[in-house]
Amino acid sequence: MNYLILGAGPAGVVAAETLRNTDPDGAITLVGAENEPPYSRMAIPYLLTGRIDERGTHLRKEPGWYKDRRIDVTSRRATAVHPGSKTVAFADGTSVPYDRLLIATGARPLRPAIPGLDLPGVHTCWTLDDARYIMDKARPGARVVLMGAGFIGSIVLEALAERGVTLTVVEMGDRMVPRMMNPTAGGMIKNWCRSKGVEVLTSTRILGIEGNGGQAKGGFLASLFRSKPANGGGALTVTLDNGHKLEADLVVISAGVRPNIEFLADSGIVMDVGIQVDEHMRTSAPDVYAAGDVAQGKDVSTGHNNIHAIQPTATEHGRVSALNMAGRPAAYKGSLQMNVLDTLGLISSSFGLWMGVEGGEAAEVIDTDNYKYLRLEFADDRMVGATAIGLTQHVGVLRGLIQTGVQLGPWKQRLMADPHRIMEAYLARTQA
Image (tube, rainbow, N blue to C red; front, side, top):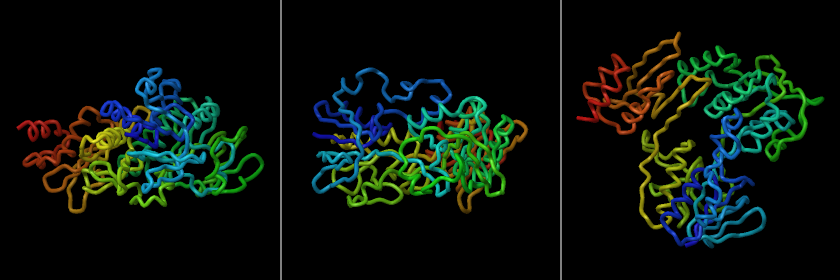
């Protein structure tokens, strides 16, 4: 059997490992788009802070790990998939056949249509190459502007702050991490960051960036095709929609991500925001599977297919898809929308339908002075979502109650009266 895996991130690596464990004789090729050993993007902030070196980002650190398992790792970029002929075309002009194909090409950072994003000193933080550039520029005392305070942006925020820079965060939403936190929680994280010396501007947009004697040439289209950081770069001026201007030595863009699926446009594979998959991670094309940030898999909260761009989901996608590729039927039970974030020492988390449901009920407790917050969301007598700030001891219990959908019975009203009794509710309803 000839297995071809597009994407050398967590989903692809776990799939390759699972395939080898399941099919000792199959040929496995793992293709990454970057000329790097397979690594975890989620480890890049730890590289920026110096807690790990580049080898620490690698998904498998043992020398010869891939060779010993007869996994052929190559670097090239796929340009088309042809399910009829079971081949994949690459940018270098080659075409590679497959018996079973896994698409795990991940996502890429968005670059908004803002003048100046192609200037030297303006950069995303997504690849190891990005990290090398940022580590060179983000030295103690450097003036850094971070565009975006979403989940990824907030992770980058902590890494930049630990490097001793003078940091200003610009977020167009009305709060930090708006896709993970409600206004109360997002506002609490903002106040925490400010207390730690990080300026956070919400409900604010960057209109343009100037530097090196003028505005960037080429605008949005030029920024799309810029693949490597420019050399040099001096002071930058960032213009905000409130009329203020910020001076910066470095601007880091964290404005969201988009699945890498454009190369599938003529494949006939059914896509929406990402690639539609069934419970076995199969796409609409025979012998073609998808996993990770490109795959719209089952969401246990909504019952619909959604993209959950987090590493635990990617690794489980990779495992399940590989078992099915190797002829071992396995079903993906679905992922729970969940986010856990450490922002300058403040732990925040949200699970399931944290924004609540129409006709549902909610209970919350707030301790503003001590940065503690807990909100529970209910539909009938089931807990369907939760948000927590500064509370870590029962995070697993919150997830368990939501993911299992257990009926709370009399414990719903007890939790409405005191949300802190979640451990008692969990034990009462799951251990009975």
